[in-house]
Amino acid sequence: MRLSFLDREQELARLKRLFESEGGALGVVYGRRRCGKSRLVQEALAGRDAVYSVGDDREGTLQRAGLAREIGRLVPGFDQVTYPEWDALLSRWLRDAAPGSILALDEFPALVSAARELPSLLQKVLDRRPDKPVKLLLCGSSQRMMQGLVLDRTAPLYGRAAEIIRLAALPAGWIGTALGIRKPEEAVEAYAVWGGIPRYWELAADHRHLGPAIRALVLSPLGVLHEEPARLLLDDLRDLTQAASILALIGQGCHRPSEIAGRLGKPATSLSRPLQRLLELGIVRREIPFALSPRDSKRTLYRIADPYLRFWFRFVEPNRSRLEAGQTDDVMASIEQRFPHHAGQVWEDLARESVPRLPGGKRSWKPASRWWGGGLNRRPLEFDIVAQSDDGKDLLLGEVTWAERTNVGRLVSDLQEKAANFPLAGRRKIRFGLWLKKRPRTIPPGVEVFTPQQVLRALR
Image 1 (spheres, rainbow, N blue to C red):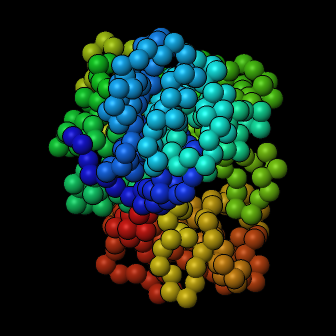
Image 2: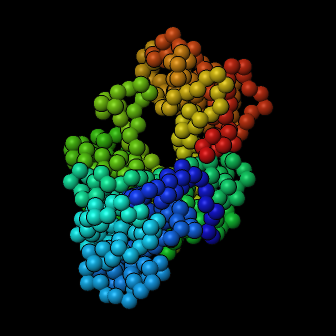
């Protein structure tokens, strides 16, 4: 099912401004596969004199012939000529294209793989007639290659792009609209599986309920998303085995570099580069306690950032043999039993993400973090949410739970007791917040309660 175009107003506005600017210009759009790059580009090109072509793995001769056919729709006779080299094709396009024309090359890394000279040729095209108002847009899923083409100082196209857009996943607040989910708590559970990737939402929209969608798309060896992590990693990583092993261990609960290294039988220092690469790609995130310096590596934890990958490495990767053997029912039963814990962790992430965006009256909050360590009473202490107000005078301490039934009085009492032992409280005024699956009938005074409806509304 093709979904309506959601969000992306800022990115769309930037592309439209690029296309309507005077003179020639280069734009770049990149991000992980299936995050909606092509759809964004097509929306931005609608109603314009534009050539849109998608690169693939064919030989350069066939690639040029295919692009020439697309240009021929805009420039009559363009496809009646055989172009032996890319330089000839690009030079003629620059010469014959009408002012305001746009050439959009999607999956640009595939073109470059077959023609390494292409970035240098495009640089010459841009430099040859900088005054001619034709636009070039490059789009690709390989973040490593796209970054290297435009952000590396040694790259031919470095410094020439007027717009560089790294397209992220859609905010969680849109998933209910996309999938027609009315209950906010069900939207959170759907997000805990599909994350914010629009293509996953489109695939899930063909199924009425979450369970059947997981079975058909993820658990089945024939499912469209069953091998998705491998495809995603292959776009950007040379050593797939090492990255997949690290993610598998993180998915099973190893969050410290020392734990991961111990399970792999390697020194922790050997993981620095692969972990850094996974961080740069946004596949994992680094978690440190509130107010702690990022240089303090002893208390650093690594978690899978994307909900779908977290789900896959938690539930699919360790059960692949069983799924291949047709034991889908058994695996699904295990998922159903453990899924509330998984959804609760994603809910905790969403709660922290929502803190700076929630309406707070006279107060506004900086980004929230977890905190763990020793309390003033020298006992282990942990907070799900800690955030400081913009003026630094208030401190928000919060508890997050995904339980069906919650003893709010006990939660607040425990939170207040922990607050009295929090070593970083100082003289700031303490505010308390609860992020709950359902709104309780009674709320203790001085405590704010937030539900999935409020959080998802904030995350749009």
